[in-house]
Length: 415
Image (tube, rainbow, N blue to C red; front, top):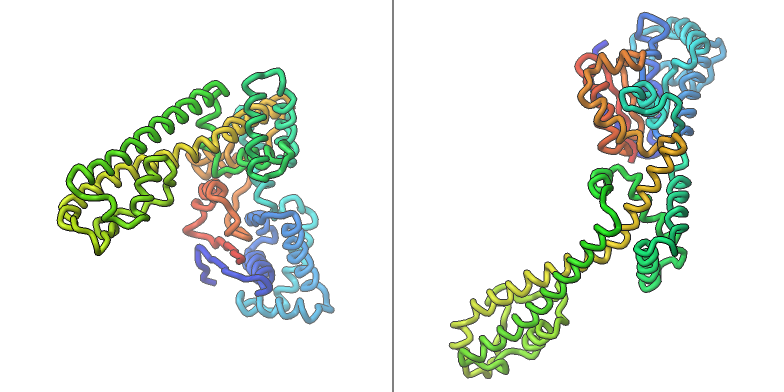
C-alpha cells in the first residue's frame, strides 16, 4: 500500500483525532511482516493522561479485534482498517491475537510516551557526553526548585547591602503598581522566565553579571536620561526662538501647538504624544499675518521637532529598560541560586532537558543516536504538534529526518 512520507491531521476537539491516531497506528502494525512493529514506532504526546489514553485505545482495540464477540464500536474501526489495508477481517483478527500477545510480553518496548520522558531517555543515553553524573536525579517540580532559590535570595536580605536595597526597590515598585504585596509570589513570576526556553540565550548572556554590574548599568541609564531631558528642554526653547527670530509669531499657531512646544520645554511631553511629522501636520490660524514667513521655515520646524522626537524615543526606551532592570537583576541572582541548588543536589530540572540535548544531538549523525538509544524508529507520531516548542522540534529533527524519505510520519494537530 502506498503511503506518504509526512501526514498532518488538523483536528478540532471532538472531531475524532484519537480515532484517527489509533487507526493509523494499527495500520502500521497490521501491514508489518512481524508482530513487533510497535518497537519501530515512537509516539509522543504531552501529558501522561494522553499517553495512557492512546495506549489503552490501541491495546483495547487489538483485544476487541481478537475476540469472537467484537463490539459494534470496535467493529467499525476494524472495518475501516480492513478497507484501508486491503486485509480481510479474518486476517486482522488473527494478527491482532499475535500482536497483543507480543505487546504483553514486551510492554516496555511499546513506546508511547510524553515528550519529556523521551527527552529524559535521550539525556540518560548521552549523560557521559554531557558530563552529567551517571546517578543524577530528575526534578519534575521546577516551581519548587525556583521557590527554594527565591527563599535563599530573600534570606540574604540584611546581610548583602546591594541585594537588600534591590529587594526593597522591587517591593516598592510592585506596591506602587498595585501588584501583590507578597514579594515571594512576585519573584516567582519573574523567575519562571528561567525555565522558558525562549529566554534561555538571554539569561545565559547575563549569567556572569553581578549586582554591581547591574548597578553600573542603572547609573549609566539614569545619567543618559537626565542628559537627554536637559537637551530636549533646551531644544524646545530653541525651536520657539527659531520661529520668533525669523519674524514669525507663536500666536499665529493654534494653542495646542504652543502647548506642545511648552510641554517639550518643561519635559512634560511623552513619547506617545509626538504628532508633528510633516509640514501638513502644523496648522496656522486663518487670522495670521505671517503665513508666508511660516511657510518658508516650516520644513526646518519639522526637522527640529524630529530631532526632539528622536531624543524622546531614547528617553522612553531607557526608562522602560530601567523599569525592568530591578527584576532583571533579581532574575539573574535567582538563576545563580537555582543552578547552585541543582549542582548541590545532583538534580537536572526537566525544564533544562531540551536545552541540554539541543547542542549535543544537532550535529550527531542519526545512526549514532539510534545506536545509543538502542532503537531504530521508523515511524513517528507527534500528538498535539502545535504545542511543541521550536527547540523540542529541532531536537526531534535528527531522528525524523533519517526516516523522512522512506517511512510514514504522522503528525496530529489539534486547535
